[in-house]
Length: 52
Image (cartoon, rainbow, N blue to C red; front, side):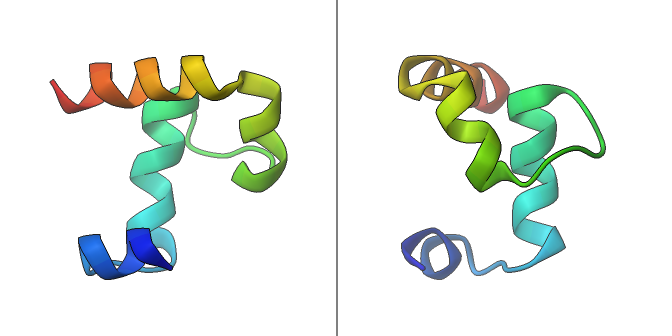
């Protein structure tokens, strides 16, 4: 909810860019299932890389 409020986005507009940044894939498993597999440190690193 905090991410939705901060970004002003929801649904596909919010989660599609996150998926691309984290997996470089257009489709895949739900992010809630995928994030624990990637791990906190990798998620942070990938988001930082995508933001730069």
